[in-house]
Amino acid sequence: FSDWQAHLTYTASFAYADNTALNLPLATGNNIGYHAGINYFSALLIPAGATLPGALQVSGAFTLMAFPGVMYSVGMRVFNRQAVALLGTTLFLFFGGWGFIDFFRDLADGGVEVLSSLPRTYTRLPDIPTAQGQTWWNTNPIVLENPIVGHFFPQRPTMIGFPLVLLVLGWLYTAWSDIEDRGTDRTRTLLFCGVLVGLTPFFNLFAFGVPLAFVGVWWIGTRFRTEWLYFLIPAALLASPVVLFLQPPSSSLEYPYDWVEHIRNPTGVPDDLGAFSRVGHWITFWFRNLGFFLPLLVAAQVVRGVLPKRLAIGLTPLWLFFIVPNAIKPHPWNGNNTHYFIFVLLLGALPIAALLVHTARKMPLSTVVIVPLCFTLMASGFIDVLVTNDQATSPWPLTAMDSAGVAVGEWARTTDTDAVFVIELGWAEGQASPHQHPVPALSGRDVLVGNDGWVFDLGIEDWSVRKDHSRIILEAGAGYQDLIDIYDVDYLVVGPNTRTPNWDPNIAFWEEAADVVYRHAGWTVYEV
Image 1 (cartoon, helix red, strand yellow):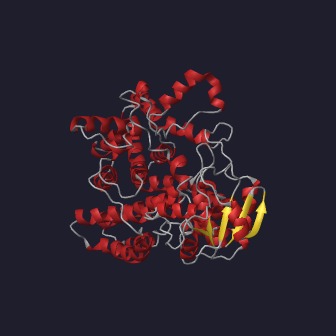
Image 2 (cartoon, rainbow, N blue to C red):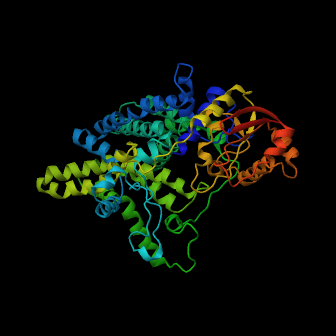
Image 3 (tube, one colour):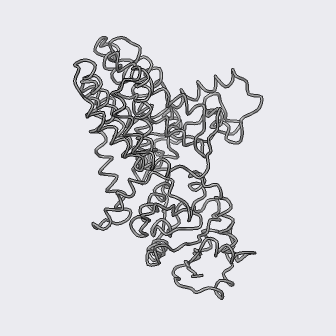
């Protein structure tokens, strides 16, 4: 619905706007600030004949369809059990919290007819009911979305990052086991993994950070064995320039930060909230979002015979990706902390599968518990994957752009590649939003500011100022000409007035003061 429009914008900027300098098309004059390598890969498919949306779909197919095989192969390499590899892969792909309870409530209230158009998703239930309908359970929103629905599709860098993290950590673990158990020289494997991870930040910054954190802890835990430097040094040296380039203009780090309470109370955490209440909320929140996942992960690490001792201890850094994001806010939007929690699911699914398979083999009768346990872990995710890929039942049937919007977006490709546009952002409640503005999404041309949520989340401090400046320019308000000169604006875009009734562009003024270079189906572009 929304993030793919950002990916269209990045891809279009590479394909149609010669964005070799890695500028941010959503806020002209800034570095891109986003690990957009998957979109650069997509742009390479366009000269080969792919359409812009098709390039995203084909590149996604290349990577996403390979993922189950990658996770399965890593499971076989590390755990050497087909059942563990299959169950762990399935558990991750279809993971979901306890939202299936809400699904059954919707089914009971609406009958089987509700299946034809489900009213909501069930691995993302962020809204808390009004006071009359609140309970100790539903005051804890579900925000940890299913990996396919909430990460693979909208967060396209994960399609490279997730398999890369699994492969690198799998290779490193088996290489270290060979070094310790057989005395084999595996420094070339460590070096290869270090080079590979060092080249990944532009494709997925987390695929650099996660292996680096693991190996850093392993290095300390093995008393600074020099072999690990074959990984750490090339990874750090190769990645540093890109990591520094992708740093946002301003830091939004907050600590200490009670992430759970801020998610539960988006308007502000009550000052009188005591420690006992916070702990109770924390436990209930995470149980509603993760179910039995964390207790099972602990059991997998501590129950003798489930995992080799080296592997059980080697998974310890995984808990950093649960504990630390609960206590800090590294990004402007606190919802981005889920990008860290998802690695707990990714790297914890196979060990949990090992626990369940081990238990079933030792005690066959335990399957009467294991089967419903797996149901609680995967039912919500399965429902969401099913319905959000079916336009007839998806709760979000939305036309991103009509034919007139597509036409103006494609026309914008005919302008100079360094052209700067001002677009409307005063969109009303119930209307489509600036997520779907066709000019940046289809042409990749720079805009003074695009969707404010994206620009804010990239750490651009003056996003709200830029938004106000866009309004002033379109309304020909005081100082508009100075703003046009400051931002080096070339074109103004005014769409059908039903789309943006909250702003009032001065059409009469611009009809006289600027050249009309495009007009069709309610869309007008003025050259200034």
